[in-house]
Image 1 (cartoon, one colour):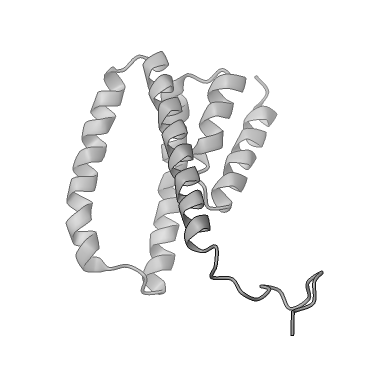
Image 2 (cartoon, rainbow, N blue to C red):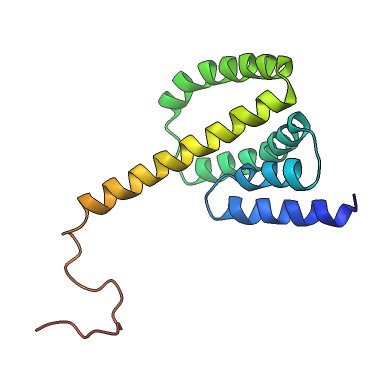
Length: 142
């Protein structure tokens, strides 16, 4: 497979990641379904790319004083332990099983996001009384 396809896949994943959604949401399916990469390797590549991204995000958040170090201290231990256990478990799964679980995970995340969008839409329905932009197609009512 030409390297150019992998470059395009990485750019697509980076674009989606830059929009706030995890880049792996798009990168992993592209790698596995279209480029024939084995599921374990695709997910490992995604996690490998996440390391520098995560480090940069932590540095930026720390500089902007957006990290609650008390909560961080409470969360970091269980997060590391869970990550290690999950990595050991995933290593024992067949590629097809891992792909199926990843697909189910994506569907559940999509359903949850739809639920939140509908809930927030209903909650905020009557809150917007004036146009968000100053220049709209409809002039404000007097």
